[in-house]
Image (cartoon, rainbow, N blue to C red; front, side):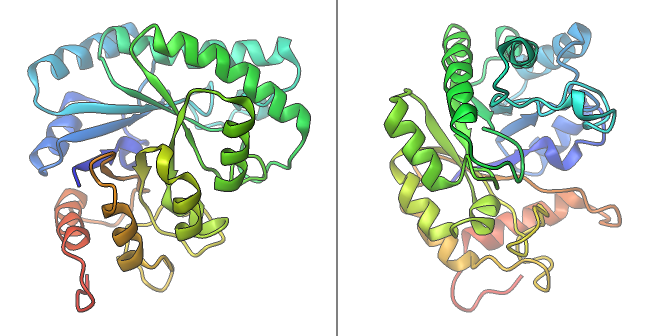
Length: 283
């Protein structure tokens, strides 16, 4: 499987050419950029232009863009009004949120990329038919805007009652939306389990998010680095992912560990371990 990394690992730092160089130097050929304005300000044309020039000269490829979750530069800490949720049932409130997503999608005009990763709802959100209807209307609009820029929208299974693997399968079969999915292994572990989620979404998986947790909280841990906290069966998970590895990369979406001396050295070792995982391997 191709190695890929989400810049979520670096989300508390401004995304720069220096950080992208470090990803490439770690032997990672694909990157997903996490759209958070303190990291990548998609309102800042100068930052986009600078990154666009770098990508044109680099062998590192932009695999995907993670759709923004908040409108502010503080990861949503400015208040609930900063949350982007495409299931907002009031159209007048939903339109500004969709405009934010479209603004992020315009990056493709400077830095081409194939996929936009999109959430349906927020963590812990309950099911309501009104939310489903709003999501359908929003995704029709987002998908059209994305396709005009050569981008395909991928829906991510998330830890709520709207976007578990089973809910996504029903949603797509019912609406007939022509979109595929990004399988988030950590989120699957918090819902129906990795194997069940994989089998439910198997034919639609086009990308992945790989990280560990305790089955309860969305911790985005380095796999196997903290076995007392992370409880995913990585041997079985990699067996599943490898069964169709020509369709998607192994994309790590990890949270920064403040006291980790050299995260890129750890990433190299982690990728090696995951790629060669056998019954006798230890990290």
